[in-house]
Image (tube, rainbow, N blue to C red; front, side, top):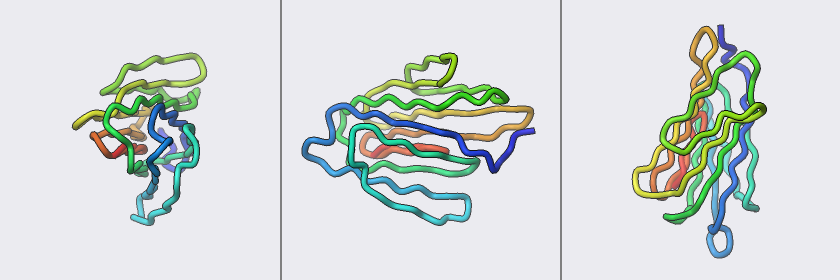
Length: 132
C-alpha cells in the first residue's frame, strides 16, 4: 500500500527564461493551503506528496525544461506527455513549454499515490506540476 504522507523529491531545470522574466511558484496541498515564492535560478528543487500541486508562472513559450524525480525503491514511476527516461536513480522528463502541453508523473505501489505534472503554455504544475 502506498504512503500518502511520503514526500517525493523533484527538481526542475529551465533553459532560456530567467534572463528577463520573474518566475513564481505556488504550492497547494490537499487542504488547499498555498505556499508562494520566487524561482531565483534556472534549477529549483521541491517536494510533493499525494494530492499536492505546484504551479510555476511566468514561463515563456518555447522554454526548455527538464523535470527529475528521485526514485523510490517501492514505487514504479511513469510519465506521460514528455520525453521520458527511467534511469537507475531518477525519473526524468524533458520538453518545451507550448500551448496546452501536459506532463504527468505517476508513482504506483500496491495502491496509487499520484504525483503529476501539467505544463500548459504559460503555466506549470507538480504532485501535479503546472507551468504557465
